[in-house]
Image 1 (cartoon, rainbow, N blue to C red):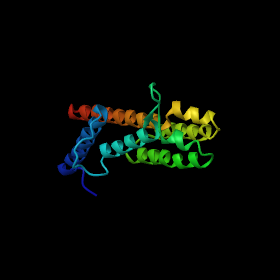
Image 2 (spheres, helix red, strand yellow):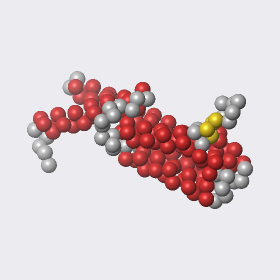
Image 3 (tube, rainbow, N blue to C red):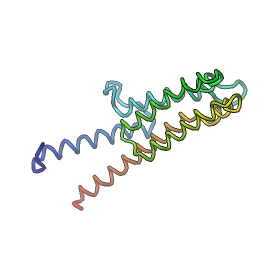
Image 4 (spheres, rainbow, N blue to C red):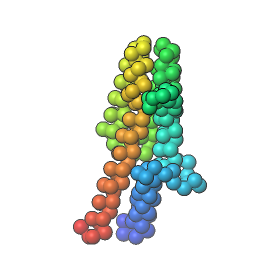
Amino acid sequence: MRSLANGSWEMEMATRQQERANSLDNVRDGTRGDAQGPAGSVEARIARLDRLAKALDSRFRIPGTSIRFGWDSILGLVPGLGGAVTFVPAVMQIVEGRRVGARRSTLIRMAVNSGLDFFIGGVPIAGDVFDVFFKANRKNLELLKAELLLSTQDERVVSAAKSRGR
């Protein structure tokens, strides 16, 4: 274990916090960040989740309307199988949320959204209509983005207080 007296440990931690803050700034402004960044970076994970959520919840548009739907609604038409198939990506979102450091309360809210989508979506016809309007995957992505922004702001406040010697 590194000694706290060694300034390199503190510098490394500050560098990591800055890298995370820079990554999360990209989440806020919607950019994907550096194309050459690591595949496991926060912005790369969020970009993958964004593509997945769009495909599942808003890939297609009903002509002449602003109503969007995705593969979740289409696959939901197949009784039993559709809900099970679309539940897997919902679980993937929750796992990725945990990997990027989302709080337990946010992960629970994401699980509730996915559970509602799974159970209500399983009701024939009414569940399919529910899927079109509820968009659990988009909701979960927004929860995760808000969580990451909040954690970045918290880190910046703590960092600013430490730099002022408090």
